[in-house]
Length: 104
Image 1 (cartoon, helix red, strand yellow):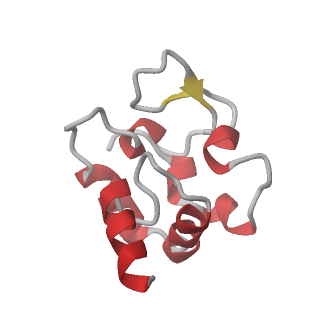
Image 2 (cartoon, rainbow, N blue to C red):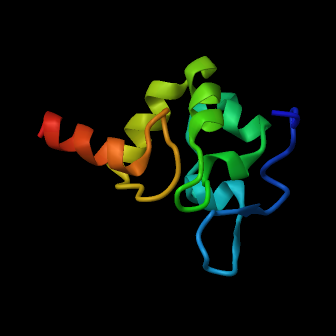
């Protein structure tokens, strides 16, 4: 990925959904900031990679997640908040749904 250390909180990002609106980093994580968010690699890279178009590749986002030190916290957040879109904690929505079924 060619993007480096962007301030994702100050720029809009495409959600990958055909809603016609952009999401900010705050919209992505919600109004209540979590301590781990400042350390999240996704906040320092191209946020569009985490919301690929339908059928698009998730490979780049998952690669970034693998190197992220707060991946577990991110995944926990996504599971607790029933995030339905995007890559969170290295997992797609389908993978998170499957994991939720496994853990009950």
